[in-house]
Image 1 (cartoon, helix red, strand yellow):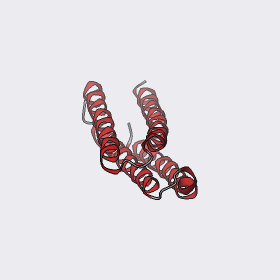
Image 2 (image 1 turned 120 degrees about the vertical axis):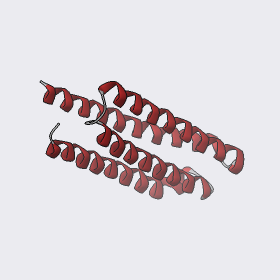
Image 3 (image 1 turned 45 degrees about the horizontal axis):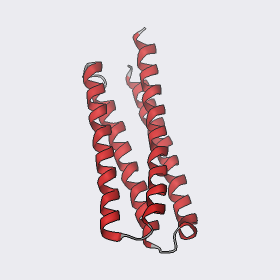
Image 4 (image 1 turned 30 degrees about the vertical axis):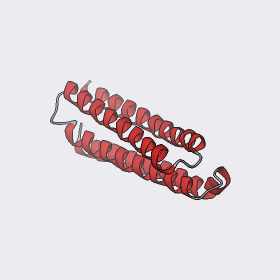
Length: 139
């Protein structure tokens, strides 16, 4: 993969990630008070959004650094390790909220899982487009 294509993919992925995060964060600010009777769950949802944004950004940076020097099997193993770490950290985030805060937990979990699934969709499209570009350049 040429350096210019690699940078284009990285910039585009980062830009799309920022747009998704901005939309989710804006929606959280606008509708957080309508979804929850207390202000605390809304702030925790914003924390979930920022956490997932930072983690996805880290995944983009790490995979783009490793994609040229590692074998495809190593890249897949690294990617799966990062995804496993993400879900474990997300579940820990939810458990801390459930055990420590205990305010509107069902609604909080529903909104947090929805946000997680939105980032998962981004991640799936990001990985598929990266793989497609890699395969096209290998031909």
